[in-house]
Length: 210
Image: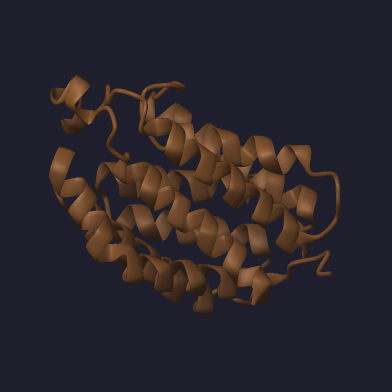
């Protein structure tokens, strides 16, 4: 059982996320082409590739600082709506755990809760509007329900919650962005942003499960 995550663990986490976004690029493009601009896969791959590269040059910093710098890098290289939300989430999450040389399972929960808060404030989205918020909320709730110390397990709980969120979005109607134009036609479809966030959380879990 791993109870602490240091800077090298965070670098590996961002590497794992970047690899996942490259793997998921075709699927995210396909999902986004139905009710969006079709560039989501490109944004996620480009943003997290840059974040991972920066993390390697910032490995001497503490975890929170690495995450904040990674977020700033995503905003810089992928200044789309999704890129801005992902960058903001990382910056806010990193700030919430700043100053700690190692992160516990509880710190990971604090990180994702702050990530969610940053996304909600920046994106102005509310629960039930078929956005990434509807995937992040159950992920955070699942993490908060876990009282153990295993870092891998707390991310496993987040992945489980996120999966439930993805399924729930299929019953919702899009109310933001280009997808809002389709309204009722989006019911039954997977939210592209939600799929991207699930890939993100799943990769975070994978980085500690390996």
